[in-house]
Each structure stands twice: as structure tokens, then as C-alpha cells.
Image (cartoon, rainbow, N blue to C red; front, side, top):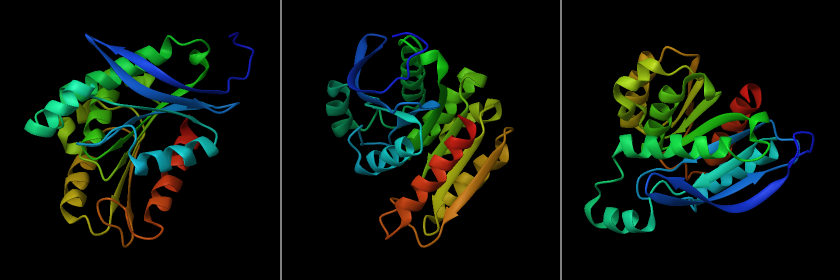
Length: 220
């Protein structure tokens, strides 16, 4: 595909990651400015209905999305028993970096800005990956995330970062406030009124999608 063509793409992909392959769905609308990679939370997958909803709104706003499984099928089975992979932020961040580098090898991908959307533990992974890739990542959004799990990597994040938390998610609000103070980049924290951790209340997830899509629209 030439650089002059307007890319419109929707396909299942297998992303190489070290000795594994990660299953994903790449969807890019015609004329997209960027692509947002999703890092799902612990015990979740690319099929998360909440992330699927946010991804659809992001595409409608003019950016593409890549939703993929951070763990292989075998790792998911093991994690369901042991829980040892879901909080391995180093592993999850490496997988996100590998997916980003894979995306950069795809025809026509150099034209796109790159964003990360992380949920729950995926928020920590997204920030750790953004710290590693620096200016290659144009924006990060965390939904009900655990940015604190990025640890020392927080101090190296260059990407403009939006943290979104529900009003009733008291513990996560405190963790996000502490992480926000450590971020040296352009940053913002939005608390969605009358929302809990999973944003299941009426209109809550719609507000998350609006905030996220606007953040990416301005920066990709």
C-alpha cells in the first residue's frame, strides 16, 4: 500500500512477541490521524465490552484502534489459576512495546500518531511502555487505572497523560493522585461523577469515551 493511499483497514492480526504470538483486532478508519493501542486490565482480554465501546467511539472520532490480548491463551489459563501474570507490569509493558514496534512495520503506519489506552492494571503497563518509548507515544489515557504500578517509570513519561477515575472509586483516586504528582509530562486527571470502578452507571462509560477520544483527537 502506497503512502499516498487513504488507509481503511479492519482485520484480525497475530502480533509476534518474543516466543509468543498475541491475537488482536486492528481497525483503522479512512483518513485516521493515529492509532490507539489498548492495554486491558487484569483478567480481561481484547473482547472487554468496556474497551470495545471506548474503541468504537475513538474510531468514530477519527483514530484507529488496536485491541489485542496481552497474554497468550496458555498464559491466560495459567493466570486464571495462579494470578501471576496479571500484575506482572514488566511483562505487560514489554508486550505493549512489542505490539507498538510491530505496528510500525505495517505498510503506511509511519503516517500515524500513536496513543495508549490502559484500563486497570493496563494503565500501569501503558505508562511503563510510554516511558520506554518516549516521544514515540503521543498520548496516554488511563481508565480506572493503576498508574502507580508503573513505579519508577512514572518519572520518565514524556507523553501527555489523562487519568480518568470514577467518583466512588476512593482507593484508586488516591493512587491516581499520587501518580499524577510524579508524572513530569503534560497531565490531567478527570473524576467522572457518580461512577464506580467499572463505570457501569448510566452515562459513565460514555463520559469516559468522550474524554478519551477528545484527548487523542487533540494529540494524534
